[in-house]
Every structure is written in C-alpha cells, then in structure tokens.
Amino acid sequence: MHPAHPLLAVLFSVILSGATLGLARAEGRPPGGGFGLALLSPGQHADVMKRVESYAVLETFLKACGRPPALEVRLRRLVRGCIEPATVNTLAQHFRRAVAARAHHRWDCVSSSGRQMISRSEEAIRMTVADVTRLCRVAR
Image (cartoon, rainbow, N blue to C red; front, side, top):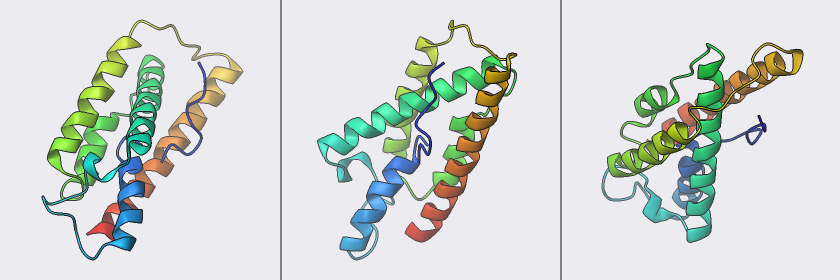
C-alpha cells in the first residue's frame, strides 16, 4: 500500500482549509449554510477529489486490517452546519466509489511494516478529525 498524504487535512477538511482561507477574505458565512465546492478553484477541486481518494485508501486498508475508521460517519457529524449538505453528499459519493474500487485489494496487515502503516494511518485520521473539529468551530 502506498501511504496516503501525511497530513491529509480528510475528506472534508480540505474544503474547510480552502474555505477558511476564503473566510479570511470575506465577511461572514457563505450563503446556503456552509462552505462548498463552489468556493474552490478548479485546481483546488481536483486536489479535494484526490484527497478524498487517499482517504478511501485509508478506509479500505484499515477496514481490511480489522480497524475500520468509519470516516464518512464520523466526518458527517463533525461538518454538520459547516459544509453544505450537497457538498458533503458529493464528496461522500466520490469516497464510496473510491472505496468500492479498492474493495478487493489485498493488504499487508501483519508484517512489521503493515502494523506500522496501521499506526500511521490511524494517527493521520486522528489529526484530520482534530483539524476538522477545529476548523468547523472557527467557521461557525
């Protein structure tokens, strides 16, 4: 397995990062009750989709190793009221497709490097959840 981007800043945190930069330039919250993909440039949008796929790799790997992180469920709760529901649904659909595309991949969960990867992956998720929590608080 190729390691996912070190500080994937997860699924939804990329949007929050880009949106938080926009927040510094604009006064107040965007219309529609939250930040969305429309706030991003085409390059940022492509980056978000690549990162969503990286999180799908993490989800698939950890689930196969008996450590399912349930990223979608966890992050949906965190971003409620912070990210537009339509954006959440778009990213979740992309995430699910990417997970399904990797569902039959064989993963190394038992070797020393496999166990080390599990640890790194779980740490990346912890950091991402903390970032999303902090960014959504700032945005509210």
